[in-house]
Each structure stands twice: as C-alpha cells, then as structure tokens.
Image (cartoon, protein in one colour):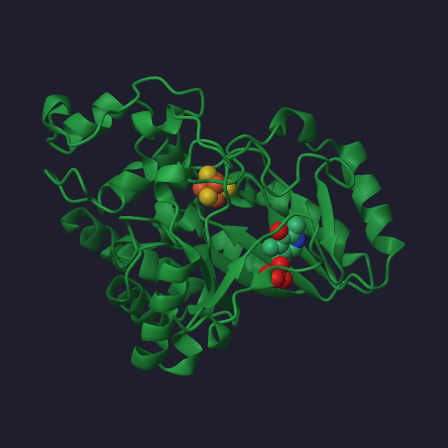
Length: 346
Ligand SMILES: *Cc1c(COP(=O)(O)O)cnc(C)c1O
Ligand code: SF4
C-alpha cells in the first residue's frame, strides 16, 4: 500500500507501456512462492493446494499486494489458488458449459443479435480458477491478419450489428499498437457505433491503463464502454481507482461484472460494499453472474435460491442503480437469462 501511494505522486512515467509489462512478466506462477510471500505455511492450510495444474496459477504482484498476509481465506487469494478440489469430477460440470468451443469464425462469436464478441487475445494476466473459459481451446483461435479481414467482412455484411465487444482471454494482453490497428479496422464499418472492452487486466495491473490506451479509446469515433471484472471490494485500491479515473475523465462509460462465488462474495454485505466502492470509483454495477458450470469449479458454485435471497437484500440496501442484474448464461439462448426476483420469493 505504501508503495502505491508513492507511485501515485510520481509523474506520468508510471503509465507508460513498459511498466505494466514488467508486472505481467513477473507474475507469481508457483503456488508455493505465493504462499510463502503471504507468510502461509502449506501444512497449516485448511485446504490442499495443487502445485502443478495444467491451467497454471498466474497472479501479478499488484493484485497480490491487496491480499492479507497470514490469511488462508483471503477472498482474493481464493480466486487464484489452485485447490485439490479442482481435480474432483462432479456431475454437471463440463468443459464447455456454454457451447462456445465452436466459434462463428476464428476469433469471433456471434450469439446475440446486435453485438459480436471478438476474442482478441488468448491469454489473461490472471488465471481465475472459476473461469468458464479455462478449458477453451485457445490455440485454435489465434487471430492472424487473414482472420481480421474475415471478421471485418463479416461485420460489413450484417447491419444489425452495432457493437463490437473485445474479449478474450483478456483483450488488453494485446499491446496498444495492436489494439489501435484493430480498432481502426472496426471504425471502417459504418454501422458499428460502439466498442466495448471486457477486461480484468487493469484490476490486477492498474498500470495497464497507459496514456496511449486512454488516448486511443477517447479519440476513436466509436463510443467506448469499458467493462471491468471485479468480484470483491478488497480488489479496489487507490491505484485501481486512479486508473479508472483516467478512463472516466475522458467520458468513457465504466461498468462492472461480478461472478457470484461461494466463500468469496456470496453475501449481501460484501456485495453492497462492492457496489458502493465501485460507484466511488465511477463504475456502475452491470451483471452479477451465476457461475458457469465448468469442470473444476464446483466448489465456487452458489445455489440460485441463495443468489435470489442476496439480491433481495441488495434491493433493500442500495440505490436502484447500484443493484446489478442477476444473470445466468445458457447455451443456445439469444441473450443472457435474467433471474426473476419477483417470482422467486421463498
Ligand atoms: C455476454 C455476451 C455478450 C454481451 O452480452 P450483453 O448482454 O450485451 O452484455 C455478447 N456475446 C457473447 C457471446 C456473450 O457471451
Ligand atoms: S481474467 Fe476473465 S477470462 Fe481471464 S481467467 Fe479471469 S475470468 Fe477468465
């Protein structure tokens, strides 16, 4: 924390390209190193950790800085630590819960009418253990320049599409020059009005909101919507606030999506705090997602009835615009499914 305060008083060099890349390449990839850093002895933990999972641990230092040393139940730690429970086979948890593994074109998913999702990058800065894309065959979906042409042609031919969503992996793993070149291509399609970016990268490395990126997004003819992915109020520190302020100042709309996770944020108090803290930082809560049942994530799942109860408490506590929509994603549906609270009274 002290380190962050010093950084905020430094000049603009902090928001240059080499800064975030340094944090990215130095991310913790070994559970043992991470535990040691947090002063946790593996034999004293209330759970067993997998030292070597094929979906590797990956967590950058700026995110680790927001974890509490000596706390094995830290809500940020539990999102990134590979636990033995991941190896358990549980009925109903499958590799491709959303039927996404066959994309429309390489790198493009067109499931909903007015918007398409482009998987611009195949990796993330953090590997979230509950991630529904943890089993995604990314190597079949790497974007080459030929794929760009195919994607732009696809957009040209469907005037119902008015929004392009950059997703991944994490689209901000791509560097600013690559993003600039791609956005320039999208701008050539006249009926595209909006660019949406779904990214968790600035949450784990706030320095990703480089001056170049801010300039790029604010100077585009496309209206920009930036959707962060924050699950717990402890994820928001001063540095992340600063990064969000930089986007907000240029008029970019900031929204947040959260995944409801057992033992991490599955209570009204935590989620109410989260909403308040998001808004303190110019971000509006957008979606609260029920977990997608991907293999290895069953220990994070929360029952729908519990989720509805939490939502009803949020409605009491919060201004209407601070209550996120509770949704579930279902394979083959033309939009996300909103969970009806009114007819769900127990
Ligand atoms: C979630 C999602 C979107 C965006 O949906 P919104 O409800 O507009 O946020 C678009 N495409 C795919 C494939 C998605 O999963
Ligand atoms: S950042 Fe998003 S896409 Fe990447 S592992 Fe985490 S939840 Fe999954």
